[in-house]
Image (cartoon, protein in one colour):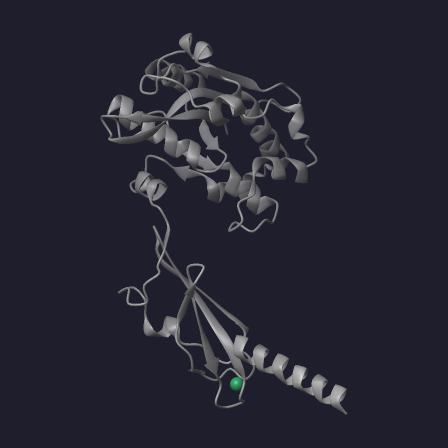
Length: 298
Ligand SMILES: [Zn+2]
């Protein structure tokens, strides 16, 4: 299978047409996995901005790309058509979804197109590497961290430039690549729902009256005896999750039940956990303190 890793640099530019900001692509870099031992085939293009007049100081400091550099760049339309020719029908990979989402936005803005014509199959390389490295997907693993875990020195690549980053991402991919484990990560970009899924923003639900929350989601069983526990305190919202005190009338165990609701493209996801009771902890501490002062008094 033919794989290319695409990396983009962009600049936040205010667009009157949008009445808001567009992450305008200013550089495209890509690397193709070649034969073992052979140097990767690469693609690089600076893109002349059409919306932003100046690149921000922050982006300039991060990438060292200047306005003068971009004057000689290609227009977005030219850059993507060259990239499409170079990539052919390869599987396109990006580190996390923000690059591909930015490409979708730029296509929509400059070409009025809701689809990226050359995108046939797509892989979120960050998600794949996280799984292969056994990392928790909830705590996104940055490129540098992944590289270090694989014994790659990120400093030996020109970082925060599209081509250097794509080469570093490709190197991570090469070390972890295994056809069987990659298979489930390959998304068919021409299938219905691909763009909706990509652009769907997962949100935490912070209203207990949300129609998708079922009563069972708010009930907890005792983690000691397994029987249904009774809620003895009010639900409190903290860090986008709800928690309340529960009491098991069967064995007398008190605990804190925590539940978090996330609305994802696939539907509602409910995560529950049982934590030590805060009230019980406080009572224990108070009892210990009383005991201690009693001893001192004696
Ligand atoms: Zn119990």
